[in-house]
Image (cartoon, rainbow, N blue to C red; front, side, top):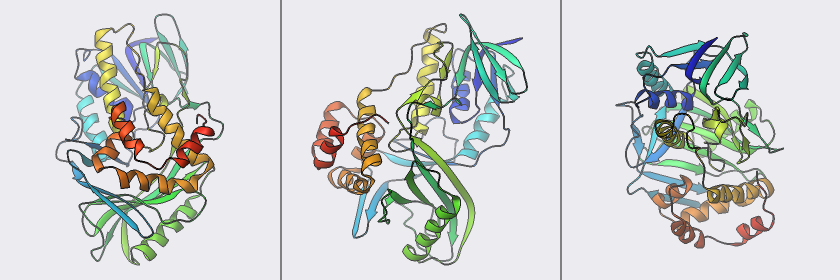
Length: 376
């Protein structure tokens, strides 16, 4: 049986990021195996906010904005960013850059296969794949084993098109985080990531605990482009469809200390927003530092309980009174600066800053949520 220092199950954002940071550390000579059933490079759009591009962001590929907005019928709230910038990253650029780096290291091997289960031991863990192969490692990092304790998971279901128009229609310096148009009982909004006055990613998102068929998502997107933006002719160069679980109740696939969850499997995607790229980078770097300090028993990465509490307050509203979310988000933007909003959503605020920010909001819906509080 082949043995490795580290086996990483899943060559997604978290898996490749972790390998990249390992190769840039004192552990770079470690024997590493990456297991993934697919060799294709996914085409996704990732965004994050920061004062500068993250070090792992491919050079020369940083497109950013210094203004964000949220709107609903009759209301348009724009907020300039001071220290922060809102960055866009293509997953294809990211994967290509990291794979080029990783393939230069002979200590890293790739296996095209699917992990089916783990067999934890006292001093190592065995990995079993769909093809029947077995291998072991001192430490296994699991990015595929999402398990939840939530019976009914709310999801952000979205469909987006990158389009080119024959006339100027977009505001190239401002990201529309939410354009809330719907009067349905579900919470729905449109997201616009403009690259120029004629080129943008336009996305429709709905919160749903039930499957949403692609046709209904497309109909909403087409209606918005036609009726709100006045576009009848446009060229679609790219489509993105996804479903992001909104839950704080993520359980590890095993209780073994030899198997460490990462990425979505570790709950690194923020439940209330769906953002996760920056958190994945921060946690992967922390994990590598912890391994450097104590390779045999690295310190676990923990999340602040108060941010889980904030997320569950919002998720309680989303589950029970989704029609109130529009006012929640509008009120947040009305009472805070752009940097304050993003720092809070990115979990970069102090408790005193959070008290100040939350004290400016309208209380009734939050009190109601507290009285009916549940963990989702």
